[in-house]
Length: 409
Image (tube, rainbow, N blue to C red; front, side, top):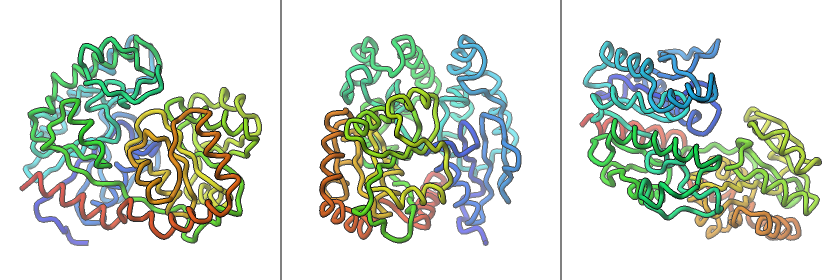
């Protein structure tokens, strides 16, 4: 296909790693495919290794040789996570050798492999740079605007005195301190209060929270994620009984809360996803079925038997692809009230929102298990109307290209 954008000569997509292992990587790859389909040359720069057989036609893949924070000794990993000199040099060299006035840079995740070291070379192209805010790490040290110790949303100003002394991290005070240092390194290396770079959010509710953390409001642009339903025909959820969870198996995703609530009610739960907490989670609800990472076709099979999909996230979920994938398939959801999209889902009659705690989630699950009529109404309403919460792939690709063109204009 001929190049549809005369302004854009090349798009450089940057992400911690190349494999699709989460929402950020999924959207990074979606952008690669969208621009390639429009005839625009794409370079994908990753911090990690390049998996075998990962070549994509008309896409150049470059690794700058970083290491994940979980690799190597903890002391070296901590230092590398703050600033990796070798990554910075490799990235600077690539820009020096390949940059053109028509090249747009799109940075996705950077905090697990690439580190703030890439910010210094990116300053030289900041007027053609777009940050994708898949979470709140650009504003909040722990990335979630959430106090994991108290189990409540955080209303503090990031990096204020009160923020610095609050033990809010999901792991430890030491981890919070390290994250604050990393945040300072990023701020000093790349100041988002004055930079011409754009910050791309996935929901309108992210803007005020990012601005509270020092991101210039004038730089923020919202582009909701595209979503493709798991199933083309409505899932008759009112005839089903199983509960479905799809996501990372880590504490901040709230999976342990779901399993505890489901065990109390003796509900059947299907869990799709992987993570370090798998064995501990099995012990919470022995009757739950764990299937690990699954393909879209496999998820579609499990979705056909689901009565409800539960998203019990502890942190502020910025969009929740899983929720909208479920709704557009006709499956009602129970979603954490801390998800930015929760109020829309509940007000439109597509599902319920509740606090991510065992008591409230148990009540919501019990209510939907007992009310076939309510589940049927939610299912039909979601299947016919939930597409309004998102964009089609073509609409999203077109708007993304418009954002790219705007930074060049």
